[in-house]
Length: 207
Length: 207
DNA sequence: TCGTGCTGAATGGCTGTTCATTCAGCGAAG
DNA sequence: CTTCGCTGAATGAACAGCCATTCAGCACGA
Image (cartoon, rainbow over all chains, first blue to last red; front, side):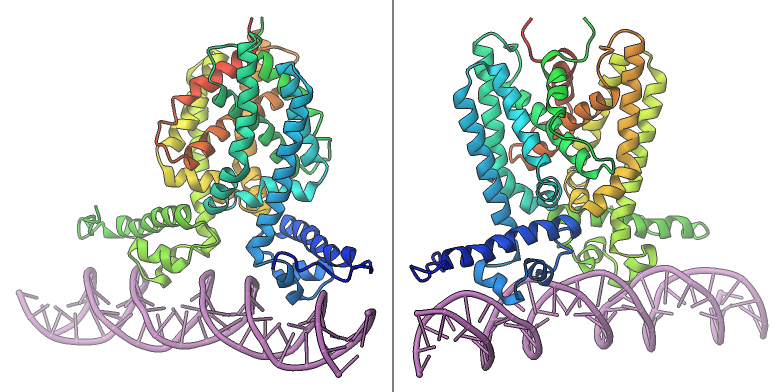
């Protein structure tokens, strides 16, 4: 049922119902991040969320549905934010700078969520494919469009393939995020965006 | 072919024993690639390898041990090959070119193995950490050393951090590999090395 | 009293691992 | 050359524990 939430009109129930769903999602993100999706038990998620095992199934179809929801929510929001940002800027170089910064800021702001995105969602070709089809390819397209725009404007080299350029940038940022997660040393992720872009824009060759 | 029956009557042991082990590793690579590590049953691996379930445990301690062995073998060989190649070349730029080419050639040569490396081994922080500690960090170091060398020689920009430069290159190559796996369209992976390097060396900005 | 959200013990299927058993092939003895 | 134990690699049915999912009932507000 889609609207399992519509409770009594004048109570604060609105918050109650939604609360549990949110609690489960938050708990699942933490539990999946800590133990890995396949090693996580639904019972663990329920315990951390402070609800009974069965309650999880009042809000989600299955364990996998929880993972999907975590992905959909955050990927959707990220792409929406990206488009919004692009609309406000005209310089292609600056557009890429903002996209990269947002990318790393978002992941750097929530380590558990970052782990789920960088690690757990990639743990099987099945997830990878869905995940790739759902959000990743659109994200790459977003970047590639900015590259084309820059090429048209003459700021980016015209002989490069936009899609490939986009993947290179994404791959570099992705690697920063994965390294950050695995690193014992705690450092800020977001500032790396500029360092990556410096290489991406100007290359490593000495002039 | 399976024909590798016991060769000569007196030298059977080595080859025979090794055969089964190899068969299991090959089968596991395929099964893990197809179904994902966590969704693969030991029984499936055994069936594909043409041995009984129990036989798997004569050669491996556990299901996880199989995955580890697949990783150790191939990562070890890749790093050894990398070092060998570096020893034969002096130009840092050419060194990176060869490393990148080998990286993509190796993965492009065996799709199942590539899936295991790009997807299955990253499916949990536990694997990721071991995997990172075991081979990845050494590989990054290998690249970073070449970068330092290039900086000392004045061919690469001295203001860039070698480790970070290495990660950017690795990330870009890694992304090429992952995309290649997920792509329905069949294309050659290895040629992308030069396209990635063109961006990596010279950047995307128009002169 | 009803209705509703929630509970958590019970269920049932699944799968990694074990181990009692089989048997091919070997060397020794005749 | 033939016979005969013996060895240990290989087998695969059975085990044991795990865990996603269900559902009969509970508590509580209206």
